[in-house]
Length: 117
Image: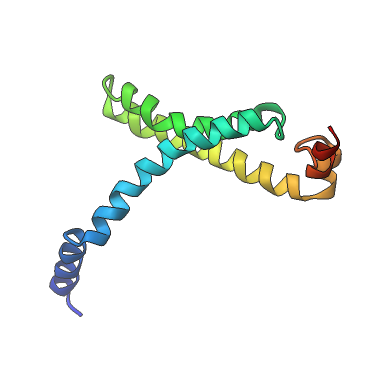
């Protein structure tokens, strides 16, 4: 395969409906995180700063877009930093909540104890 064939394949992919769907999906997923963040806050099952991580993921796109009026690099940097911190926090919280010692430390309430209250 030559370089010209590769360029033609990429150009065809960019014009495909699949690319359009995927291109629209990532900002919609961040906006959906606003809903998820509200549900996490309302559930009161996660404690500490980790409660606000899904909301931070959802707010990263609109807040970074608002900052882009200052400078395009501010948008790129702030969006990357905020989403990295928030998604890593979500991942660590989910991992630790599944561990017995994570429940013992009160990171996440055990669903069995929620039924009693």
